Image (cartoon, rainbow, N blue to C red; front, side, top):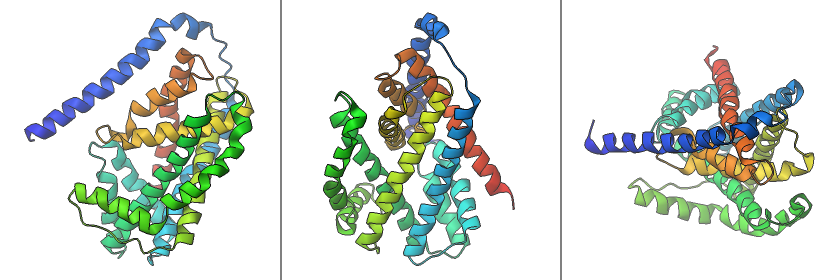
Length: 298
């Protein structure tokens, strides 16, 4: 192992360790508040949260399979599910490239050209991130507004900006600029603008499902008004995506939890929000492992 790789691993451990140290210290220093909090564990919201989360994870596979089909490489759902979840575990390895490499390799086993499988992954990641940024921008502007849920109609004002960002020619230019810096080959997005619009909407729905699932997870231990579901959706999309984009840390470990705790503290006391954020990692990972279990079944 080279010196650079060794330093990267050390840095990863330090960052993850520091994040969890401060998260746990926050809970420890406010243990009295955590202990005295009226934890109201409720099985029904927990079950609902898992059902919604499984639907969200199912939706991600459906969207990726739809992209492949639009690129001219249709794939059976069972095979799509297997490829997605086999390679998905690569997100938890350092480097962030293993998921992509795994998907390209497994798609190759199904006679899908590398160019098409790689392009499908780039489109999926790009539109997913852009849709999350769409929600991030909205939340950043209006989170401090009193009665935040009542201003969600202003999301429609962001639509023109979102449509420009997902236009194939614009997106291709941005992606290829990034690939050039990474010294990788440019790609060609052979996909219609109307298809990109539908994908953008699908991913917004996906974030909505994820965020609603997280809302019910919160409600399994802490009562939270249903009026805050739009805010929780924006918070989850923000924390998940920024954690994903932090390339040094596999699976956004610690980054997602720290952001969730910080953003949730607007509506929940920080020590309580920290506990919920830490538990959410177990909740989400458990659902992913169940999905992987189904993928392993032949």
